[in-house]
Image (cartoon, rainbow, N blue to C red; front, top):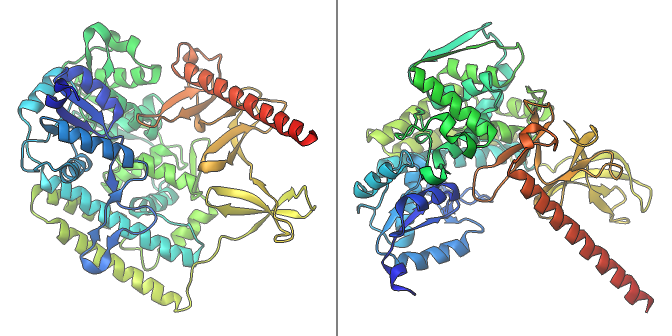
Length: 561
């Protein structure tokens, strides 16, 4: 090991995008490393909370993080000092405290860098003003995490008996599901949102109204604006302060026209909108509800109830759609038959503990943990004891014979090509697949192809979706093989603002996802970074296809010999 590496201080952050910006801001005296998310967390496959012993959490190494954890332990031993530059919120504070335990850092030492913005001056001030871990802030996250895990696990256990295995929903998503069912009721013809402070919720509402950006897209773009860009000669840095409750410009206040060439079109549109609103010092936006349940209606209903929805909404709605509790056609939300069964099952014994009023009260008490007037244990026990009592009563009413129901077998219109019997639609570890109804005589299976409403960007046919090995989703065209469209990227219900084509979402392992129009001739695709990504993916696909063909030819040749 070189002497230079041994004497450098280590800065850990949870995001690769933030790490890239920090590296350019701190110079060679610091080694900046991204952990790519939590290193330890509650397990996904079990509850991970000891209900009998004070709701004690059991944190385990996140799957896939073992190698980086090992490497970081080696880095930490060689480092002069270790700083934690995780997000300035409860989640980031909890992660920083957990890293102290993992790497043997005293949490009372000055190890925490509070970075509300990523600029040279802010980073310098954060390092010189490094502080100890804020236990109250970290505890507020842990309390919410334990409460959510206990609720979601026990709801899943109950719904597996009333509906079937695999049906589950958490606190926020149960409330959101109910709200979607009722959000179009009683909305006024127009609602004006105005004020002097630009909140996270208002940015999402404003972007939906003015730019037609979904809440999910807006959240992703806000993360990019905070984590920063390389402006070449003008240096690197973030454009906004951390998108917490209030959205503010970074202290460097770069004008939109100065950074336009470095931003993607949608990222620039959002930044320009935020900059102009803040520059004018006030804002107002008029909403005109359509009478149907769309994102506007849901946001307004949350505002009406006084619930802070901005942080969890985008992930919540995505989960409800993925689990088939809600459909989203033409930007209109509708609760599905399965979603209504979930609502009906939880309406009795769980009605109060999953209500909007209770959610609001728990959020307020969570804020009091940060202030130091309520302890983590007090909040966890007050809610979880009540929830567990509701769960016990619900299970008691089902009777001693209650047990999880298997996923119902549905007969498809497909015919088995091996024996001629009809194929069943079944669910397995990697999702939905087709299996012959003649099992065990015939064990034939094949992927289940789902037809989506989104249009193929090449021929206009419907896009198909199917699960492949490893649980990934693969998208093609219903007119295959006549049409050769295929993609690993998820088609969106939103269409391109310029050409009306289907939008796609490309996901990265260590940074925010990227939206792009599927129409290669659209002006938004000109010089778009996804072009190279897709070209490389096609090249790899063709190379793999060629190798498989050569392998098959070789096997055939060997059989003949």
